[in-house]
Length: 376
Image (cartoon, rainbow, N blue to C red):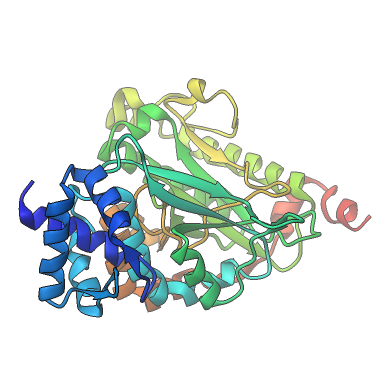
């Protein structure tokens, strides 16, 4: 381990702390030595080098990063030799102060699950230890509510980087959005770019069905990992949760009907990674859909949650970013890097300003049990 790499590790550790946060030498030694095996003497030398360069400062017997040091640490965000959880928290510290206003409308006035990340004990360089939190640590138990930019940043201080709001407000027995999560089976996911292209094609076909046959206004966003979601907003509730789930099953049937007319195309283009039927709406039996794309309705339930638009995915550090239908075939996950999203934030926000859809055609296809049952 070179002196430069030890300096980098110390700087990264200091840079993920909240502004002006002071930490002890013992804490720094514990974390850095765990990650790279450096001795206390080597770590203290690295600290002194950082202080001499103006990247850190010592206050009595504790240490903290300077603004210069925090800016310099940014170069380590994608350095795969560094602790992965630290890199993701650093990305979150850069990203959320700039993007909080974009994500906030999808968090306000509803419970929010958060994912906090910490170092994996066995492999802190390549893995994270996520903590999924549905409730604040309070008695009596209460949900997380995040209604201001300041509250978002407070959660980031606690290593929360992924924000997953409930699909409904408290007391409502219907979701605020119709959400379809396109989730590829393992054979498709493992096929890399080829499998990702298949997901893109099925996403486009799903959007076309929703637009052309049901007269809806769907909006697409990247999941932050390897899939896409389609969201629709209505003027008034479609019905209770089960009504929304039935809508997804109906949409899947219409999509598969269209895809079936091009089975030869898909077989020739994607070979053994695709099966007939290409899609499914059966959430269970994951092993049986390895070669299919699931149109997943499982978030459409009481206490169902979904990654918010503009949230960071806790595994990848990529943003769950809006994608226009006409851009999806050219979409590359690198476009979802936090720095790229910030550069294009204004356009991306507009791309997910959802207009309400008229549900009358969808209601007709589903039958008359919807609003009457809902009102009754």
